[in-house]
Image (cartoon, rainbow, N blue to C red):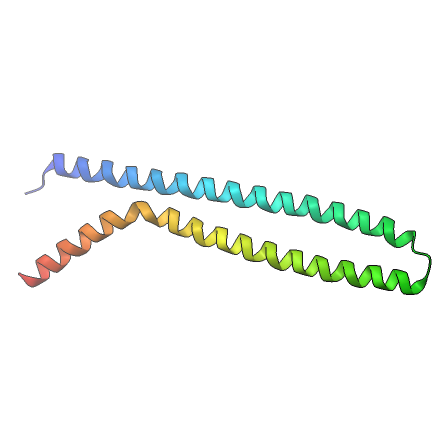
Length: 117
């Protein structure tokens, strides 16, 4: 027989889990957006500083060396930032799924019990 109290309780639990997951996702996306904005600002500032150095180079060899060093540093910085943001996305996925772990485990146990009977 259908029990409205149980249905109401399950609905409330499902809503609580969804809200916790949504909150974790929101925090994660905000952190990622902040990190990306900070990196963009730093990258732009570094580019402007490099351009100023490049325009004041005394020789073609000095300009070539400045450009080579800038490109190497820029690539390393981008790679490190991409790795960091990738890790932030992985953490976001873990945090967003965490509220669902207990209900999924409970449902899995119930299914196993029902299948065994």
